[in-house]
Length: 394
Image (tube, rainbow, N blue to C red):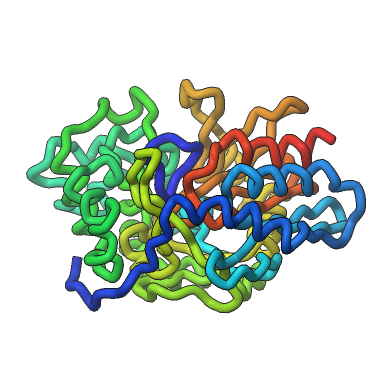
């Protein structure tokens, strides 16, 4: 089970506003994606020399992913590729301009917004959660005075992950999704559920990926600015970088056109698990930990500017890239992480949300970056890693 995620570690209410009808696709439908891929040959355009990357995309589809899109930028050259289908019923191909949910790649946008606020003098990474959200963790097993903003952003807070909370996950497991897909949540309610569970460790003494950390970070952004989380991200990231296709959706369950359908097994790991069309749902269940919608072009533009040092001042850039050892073969900075490829270390983030897996990986200087989206979240993560190995280690 891994949603709004980072690296396949188990990871980004007001009232129910309506009920929807989900399309349920049986397991027998999965091979249709491979058949459809043969009807829609993989396509790519732009900079030559990406045959290995294109082949890795094809392999994702051959192994059961309905469809995948990718974009690489290297210096002034760019390349776009796709394979498989955007819709299992209509058998239409995926296209590079599609919008998709980026899941926990949202955390990079959240962390950068916090760092921008520090550069503006609104807050400090050393500030405690209690300073900005007084009383939020009262009557829990957590001491908000001992948890810093930095510890939220690098997952060393010890705060329990909302996606490990049974009473939350059960609302979206299998058929329950049909009843709860349009439920609206506040970050306060999600934090309340998560912090009913005891701390995993004392602040600063361990590492554990927790979406709750970033829900709290989003709340701090709002407290520090007097703006909504969405407005703060738009003001400090989206507008300056002209990320016109990137959306902070709030409670809206739809995606901008064009977009693929999103397919998910909805937390059910059984071999015969049904596959659901999870394209529409209320993204407030993810909030500042995983709600953003984007495109491969916008993600590349964002990460290229970020790692090239064109967004944050030097002090905040150093903080961004100061990683802690996760004990899982990579380091985690502030909303970014390392990837150990055969040809060296790269930086980026990945996200896994209902029916969508997104990942952006970049060289440390932002010169070479690749973003990929698959419209499922059941494929073997090693297959996605092979896409990046093919691109960066060719």
